[in-house]
Length: 265
Image (tube, rainbow, N blue to C red; front, top):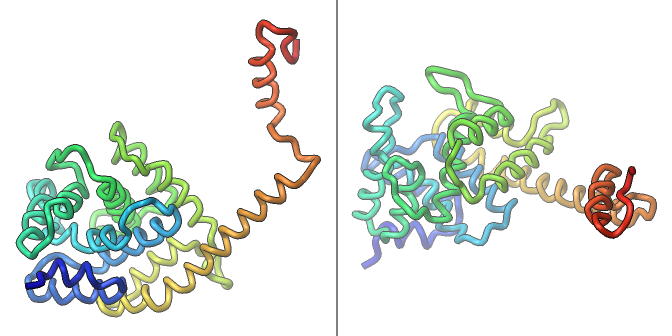
């Protein structure tokens, strides 16, 4: 007999997958709000951008479910420290295997689960970065560049995340994409605006899946083509130096040691 885990993992359409979790949340009173959809959309774009060799369907399903026991109260320290483990335990009761539950448990590091799964590193980056972009009762949301600095130098300082550099590249890339012809609004800031202005989970799912995603995906491909063309043109330019003057001097100084004069001497 198929379990809930089988059912949702077999559903490949992300919007339909979101609706399934929405109705599970209404029935079982698990945590599922617009912030989960928001972070899952960031995960989707990151996977499409980076082409990391992971099971995309598994990661996006985990992104939707890793916070099922989240306590939305910054003052509940014990709840903050235990919700990921409690969520993993709950997911095991509805048919998910040990590895999937471990991936979800490692969305944060409070359970000290180790070694960490690759997919968990993606969830961690998306969960923390996405959370900082959104308003909280105690603060307003950070801008993407500010959130990126805090992610790297505060939240995950002295912690190894295998995809940190790739995620930094992704955010910087997304910040170069303007999604509006009328005002200067980058892709991530537009997603925040949609989150803040859309009432209800179902409406937000529809707005993201059927309006935001198609437009931003086209813009991402357009930006990639533009960067590839610029790179190709630079390579084809016979007058463009291969290295900067400073880099060339360092190379020549290094090669010149012991075999001749150094550059600049």
